[in-house]
Length: 167
Image (cartoon, rainbow, N blue to C red; front, side, top):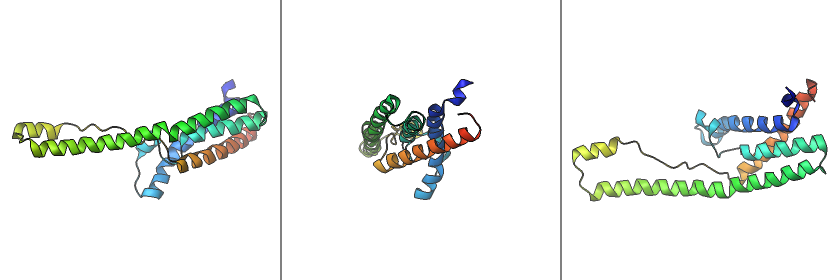
């Protein structure tokens, strides 16, 4: 049960869970539509990647001081994670959007050009359409609010653990 006293680990995982579930009401407020699937999806507001690494960095800084090598390691790791979530993963998602539109356009073109028999048309229309996942990465504003979320979660986690004398 020693793991229950690992403040940085608890803060990071709490930030991930909180950020994932807060995406549901945030999506409703911003878009007026939401789904429970957002709790397990990538992308969205706030970034759970950023929340996790910033909670870890903050917890390590609170526990060991900002000059700690742990903070240096976590900060380096955090910058890489946040950069990746806005860069490579976001670009992959944007390519997914484009490829999905190309698939739809190709299917419409194929239906217009080729005279399909009723049997094959029914078969094509009855097939489940496959789409690439489009929301893989984050916008900078989502990363920013992920950072704020992580910092807040680290302070709240420290207060709770201190209150219950687990630190």
